[in-house]
Image 1 (tube, rainbow, N blue to C red):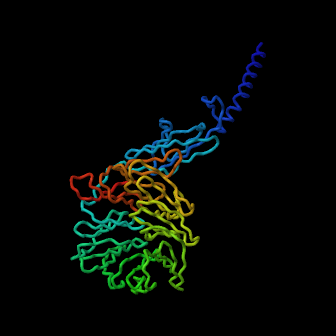
Image 2: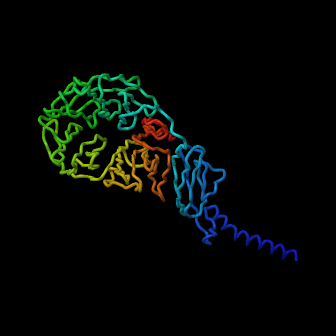
Image 3: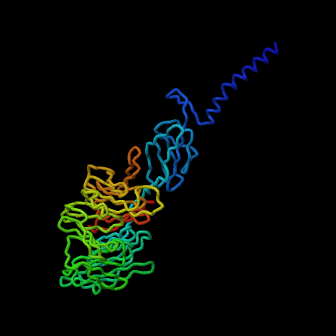
Length: 455
């Protein structure tokens, strides 16, 4: 009888082993039983990280205990999960992401934006605001014709020497290296031009008029060389070298609708066509017909010619190599993305953002076609790149907002600040601060400058 019981117990243990062994093997291999689907499925994994770190993680409304970003959440049954990241003093991030069997879903380097109020920078009433190409500096003129330059990385404001006895002072344009700025001053009788130069030690203001041709009607920076200015007068188009302190007439008797120099090439737009004039051999070649009334060249860092007219809101890009228009669109304004070469996220270097009253678009020259990012029922007041190229900051419906370019499920849109009379919007070159001027938060009518901490 005892032998029978011993054999019976042995058989039970063998059966338990035979049943549990495959279960344990499957479990160790990442298989789980899906009660909703009543079957065993291979699980997936979710890898989550954020900037800043140590954000709490929620899946379908339930906090993942013992886990903060960065985290690897394993053994998730295949399904769509509502992922939320939450951190004190930051806006929540939320998105529905799919997890597939035997695969990893990534939600990496998610940027969490600070939930703070804008800070007052200065209460001066501004009449002009001009950001440099990479938003490193913002030049400003107040109602008393005082000039200053705001360093967006440090928040430091440098005041320029006063230009006296002039009532009409204008910011003409920044150089490509963001360290030089052309300024004009008009007293009703004559116009004087100045060059503001900024380095790590100081900022200087010098009279530029003597270097320029007589009575210039326009001034532009060269598209690549920050020591060359192109100018136009009744004699034609001139090239001014700031280092050599020389001026050269490069195109005699030319008076195009718009012109731009780059790499010893002079690009002309006249009579509804774009031309290339080689400065060295003086050859003139037609690139393309282009019907763009009032358009003028925009200095940029890509190998496309950009023409835009603010009044008609026409925007055109022309490829000088293929000699064809790349895009022809409506644009209320535009902004260039100048990204670091090692940033793997977002569009490639020198992508163009443009918008009209209702839509925001981006154009990546490598892709060839513009991409619609979003469309609204309220008018868009402004839109600019965040320098990492993964988000766009924009203003509409009396709010400053930020939208991500990750289009898995829906693009997240977060309200950053409330505004009433926004006139200028610039993200600092490091991406940590947002500068704007607005009259909504004071009883004064002055367009005061605010800084909003983003990260």
